[in-house]
Length: 115
Image 1 (tube, rainbow, N blue to C red):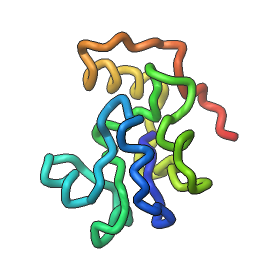
Image 2: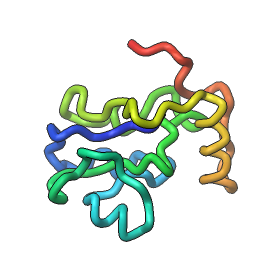
Image 3: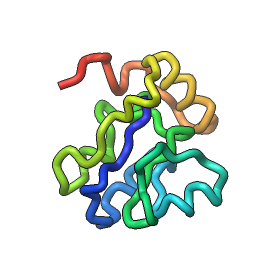
């Protein structure tokens, strides 16, 4: 499933360069101007960073954990978005489609177990 950034975001920008799929935008309007969908409640009033579900793969295929969550200084600010449940297979396929020139590793990322 895609991740979302909660209203606790302090707009520090730590997550932006870490996303291998370029799924994070500084504002909701910036994401929507690029024709990406942002889940309800994210970035209301353009006050916080947002993650587009169109591009988010929870870093499956790239890293062992979502990079936005690992670098975020605010605990539990980057969380799974229950509105977009996706299997590991779907996330891997999305990663391959988004990044045709990158090597996607089937053994990297989410394993279906939430902590």
